[in-house]
Amino acid sequence: MIRWIFLLVSVIACWNVKAFSNLTSLNNNGIEQWEVKVFSGKSIYTINQYQGRFALQALSQSSASGLVLKKKIDLTVTPYINWSWLVEKTLHPLNERSKSGDDFVARIYVVIDGGFMVWQTKSLNYVWSSNQDIGLVWDNPFAGSNVKMMSIQGKESKTGKWYQEKRNVYKDLIDTFGDQGSEKANLKAYNHIDIIAIMTDTDNSEKAAESYYGDIVFSAG
Image (cartoon, rainbow, N blue to C red; front, side):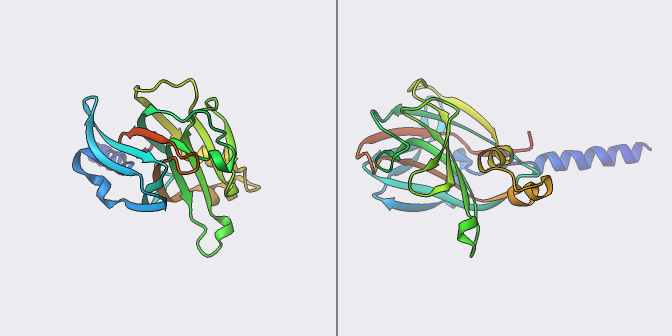
């Protein structure tokens, strides 16, 4: 009996280790595995020590480019995304629900890749909004209902302050895109993501932004 108890504990311990994935590892320059994606001008991303911690600094001047990681994440094992971020300069005034104002000082987005069925591709953007309240969700003005924007920080958030975030991606996908008709269908539709991206962009507003990101970690709880 004791042998089986030790075996069970070992299995649980191994599972807990696997149920944690740091996608950036900024202290080990893990961001090198992320690819640069330029949309309109190149934002600058560098790893620096900032306020006593390793951080990814993002500088944008009328530009829109991001860092993209193509990695399948099993949301049935690690549904939670954890990160921290800080902004030094926000964008005012700006209607972020319009095409001319679709800029964000900081955003992290997750993507379900539809492959050849492009219309099934879905993306959820966790954004730091300069002009709206926290907790709002809206369709992206360029991509429509297949891309949802969710304001995790908003116009009352303080600049120069680190905010620690934790979101249940699996639940957020269901809440923002709606169910697929049954619990089983939900599981099939939202049980994984294929792409994670970081972007600070100011191309539409032609403004400047300075932001910082901490490690991005997926966890079981």
